[in-house]
Image (tube, rainbow, N blue to C red; front, side, top):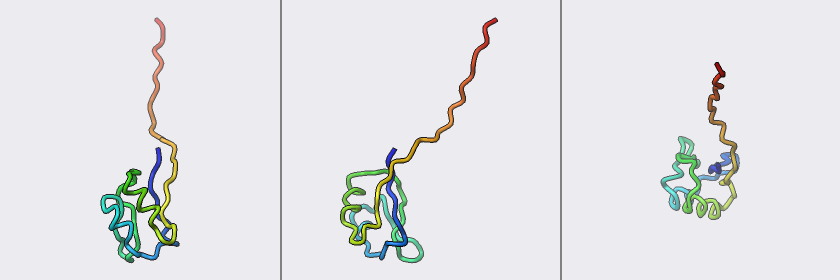
Amino acid sequence: MEIVKVDNAKCIGCGACVAIAPETFDFDDDGLSKVINEEVTESAKSACESCPVEAISTEEVIDTTYTEVTEEKAA
């Protein structure tokens, strides 16, 4: 699964990402970008490409959903 991330150490708060993909980004209390929806959409990709300081990226993550496996014992 791929997700969208913002590196707040790089972000300058220009707002391009919020303008391009408001369903994915918003401003935090410091006026910097934050991810509000991690889903990688076409508009999120466009925002990533438009970031002037390359603070937005996508990252592949491993699905860590736990599924219990049970064994049936033969009688």
